[in-house]
Image (tube, rainbow, N blue to C red; front, side, top):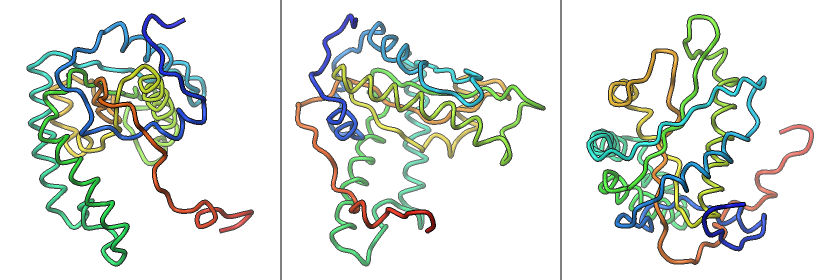
Length: 221
């Protein structure tokens, strides 16, 4: 039983309408820590590689900590947006799809400019317990496959309780700075920084995606 209101959604609706929420995060409404803990209790039930259970979560609410991460985030996002890999510049030969890319870029820019105002940042981490504690090409799959399902479970649990989230990859490009801000041991790696806040409005719909038959293969590519 949840201690907080649950949004009435079928399983299919939950899975198809859990969107990346950026502009619609309510930056003024506090998020109870009990609610975050409830979502994380669900997250740690996710399957882990080899049953290692080596995913951890840093919940950042301290204003100074959030501001430090936000400064790093905005600087890094500006670098990405100006690079050849900018989200807005993808699929330029397809006007309709590029138009969607520009919408995503605009919302990502908005998030970058307001990252420090998000009331809760959840930073999933994975602890490398083998060898010298380094994440390598050989062991990366084992470790990421433990923390990523748990993070998605957190995001689904959050959505079902009225919270918006989005997976962000920006802080990964500033890993050393994040290590300093969060005090990460050498054998602990962060996977993402998930902004968490109540969302505004109630309408979330399935996204327009490439048709299944365009990406479906049987037996061979």
